[in-house]
Length: 289
Image 1: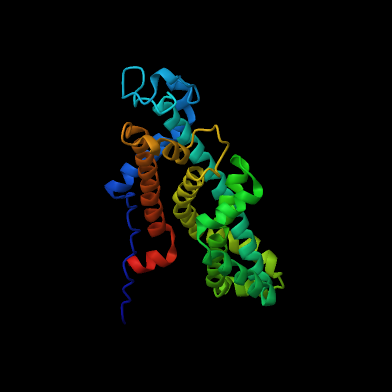
Image 2: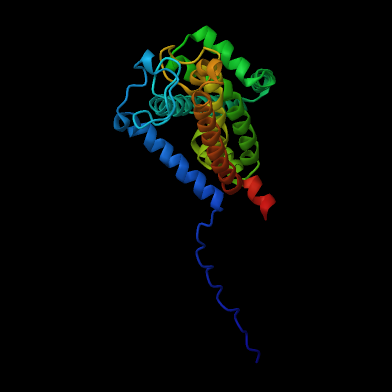
């Protein structure tokens, strides 16, 4: 008589804490603070970013003007806070346009296949061969100025990137057994793509949004610097740098403040995006293992 010894029950591994690098925590805190400042900062600070006082031109920091004044006597801090709101708003709208247009068209073209997929992704490759800023300038020149046209132009500039992400995710999921089982019962390709496959590729899409968001901020600032951004009287970081660059020797703060704010914001968002990609992208997780 032989005794069969059953293997011990495997204990479930304890839940691991969410351990993030210190740089990610700092970047997240700064981005959250930037969002709060953009939402309530202009109302709390009180000074009008468009109010001019020619007698107070290019003044250094003082009790009344925290960062001093620009060449038209406008308060630099007030314009910096308003520019932050403008940058985040345009970048968020552009990101929504890019994700919606790119993912929908990329999945649709992949599901249809054949000549449609070949022509569509050939056009996508053609757009990606152009510099992003140049493409955005061409689009905004055709659409006009203003928050809406600028956001649409920047969004369409980065939509091809999301289309390629959707195509690669479609190819990866298409080879898995559950898609074959769904096809076996007669489901149509478009239904498979948007009903069953789209929820399973949210990770790469979210990762790409974190990567594209700082690029949207920089592109909007470059367009504002060149005079093709939002309305001419609006306070944007790119326009602040362009207008104050002539007076850099006498008032460097007017140039350095928006430039450093732009660099810090994009760096923080890029750090968060890199960490999101490491945790959400399945390819990056496999490489890490």
